[in-house]
Amino acid sequence: MQLKNKVAIVTGAGQGIGLGIALALAKADCHVVVSDMNQTSCDRAAAKIKKLGVKTLAVACDVSKKTEVDNLISETVKKFGKLDILVNNAGIFPFVSFLNMTEADWDKVQEVNLKGVFLCAQAAVKKMKAHGKIVNISSVASLIGFEGLVHYCASKGGVNGFTRALALELATKKINVNAVAPGAIETPGLTTAMTKEMKQGTVAAIPWKRMGTPDDIAQAVVFLASDQADYITGQVLVVDGGWTLR
Ligand SMILES: NC(=O)c1ccc[n+]([C@@H]2O[C@H](COP(=O)([O-])OP(=O)(O)OC[C@H]3O[C@@H](n4cnc5c(N)ncnc54)[C@H](O)[C@@H]3O)[C@@H](O)[C@H]2O)c1
Image 1 (cartoon, rainbow, N blue to C red):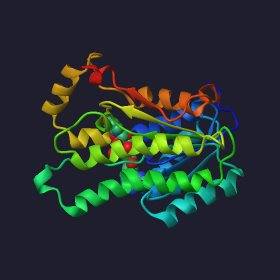
Image 2: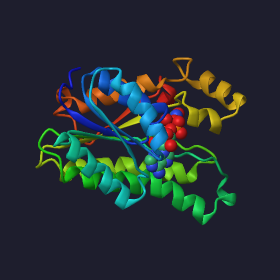
Image 3: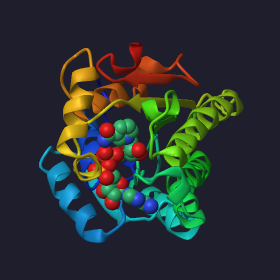
């Protein structure tokens, strides 16, 4: 897949799926702006991208804060003069049972996972031209339920609805909006959230008999970010080794 001379922003690119996406885009010859909560993790990711021979920029940004999001987009346009691809990857999945869930727990998850997608997409679209691509990282939790993740499942269901509605609204501008819904993916975030027993149970339930890797997700994102996906919009592509098939 060729993304030569395209410019992409990946949020939450300091580790895990976001870093995998940033690396895969760079391997496809795309210039990549890496963004995460703190400058150190952005710089670390940018150093890896640079080694792949493309241009990069490291901008710290909390996606739930409008001023920081606006700064991310303006720094990108200042350096590269354009923006072709936005990957809304930043997300959190703190397990907490429904009755113990505080209003603050609920708000935090919606602010990062759903409001962050809205803020980044709105600021990005203002700078995008025809053939621009937005790829939102949803989750299989948008389609099936998970105990301890009521707030998360709601936020990712919201991401799917957002994806479809925005795809319709941006069709006249010829900007594609799609989502990738990962299954269980081996990342630092998931390792912290799941016990060894939970992980074993999950692998047993996945027809492919393994957890996914960040690159499994990244390959789907690279495709949806490419011109080969020009006629695909408003879709949620599940990448889960068959986990949700039964
Ligand atoms: N790992 C999985 O199994 C899995 C499955 C389905 C969906 N997802 C989704 O994939 C995305 C990435 O997950 P991951 O497993 O790589 O997680 P992770 O915790 O390993 O990495 C997430 C990154 O996002 C950053 N981040 C968190 N809050 C942020 C904010 N407010 N602003 C900017 N950056 C922020 C973190 O600093 C971190 O670097 C998330 O949207 C998650 O919901 C993950």
